[in-house]
Amino acid sequence: MNVMRYTVIDGSGGVSFVAHCDVCFALMAACATGPQTLQQLLDFAELYYGNLSDYVQDGLAVFDEWNRPGRYEPIHAALATCPPERQPVFRVVDDITREASLRPVKAGVVVFNLRAKRVIQLQNSYIEIQRKGRAKFFDGSKTTDRYFTYRLPAGWALVP
Image 1 (tube, rainbow, N blue to C red):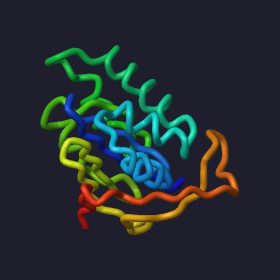
Image 2 (cartoon, rainbow, N blue to C red; image 1 turned 90 degrees about the vertical axis):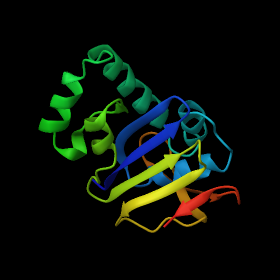
Image 3 (tube, one colour; image 1 turned 180 degrees about the horizontal axis):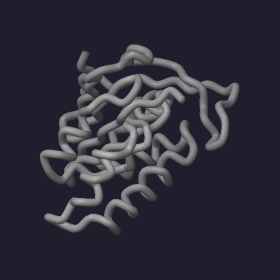
Image 4 (cartoon, rainbow, N blue to C red; image 1 turned 30 degrees about the vertical axis):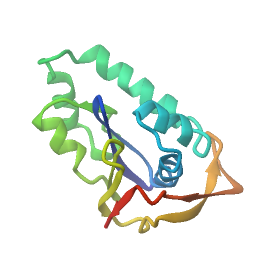
């Protein structure tokens, strides 16, 4: 499966998850709506890539259940033992999770900094992200034959 890491930074911190490479296009389209929070980004991306919000929110619920402030042994263990493509959704809470949130998985890692309005391609061997583009909808179970387009607003930076 073609996957990469996505890290989203908003006013409350960072969240990192691994998902199919095509999620990137849905997140780019969502950025065009000016989201301020992770939830807003996911809500808009859900229009193009079904079940993404549930995947991330369910993963965060598990993270919150198993990890407590200052006691992050469960996520540290998961990051150390799980194959990168199977690592769970996690919050960036310390140096270990910060480093993991920037570590590429298979096709790469892309950071969406909602506060700074920046999309940062740290590593991307899937396809170079452009300011505008076109991709197929994913209905939650399969890619459809319908396309959506996106255009990143001028106020957003795309690094490299």
